Amino acid sequence: MPMPASEIERMIKKALPDAEIVITDLAGDGDHYSARVVSEAFRGLSRVRQHQLVYEALGGQMGGALHALALETTTP
Image (tube, rainbow, N blue to C red; front, side, top):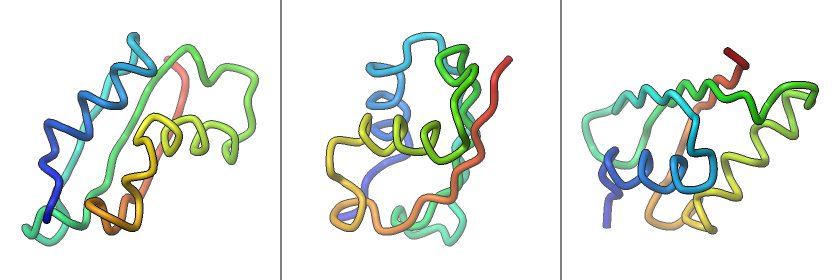
């Protein structure tokens, strides 16, 4: 079952309350998204760790309800 973009945003915001998030449905199928996440929480972290924080926020949904998520993370 596809995951709506609003749910992805809600989950990320719960873990990173200051995050500015832009989500794009890449295929129109609710399974393939790109997300641009801007958060102060990323400051000083490697890109890999930034992405891990976002994946952790999604609570194991990657590979299940959420098939693919291309991430761009940065600080404000």
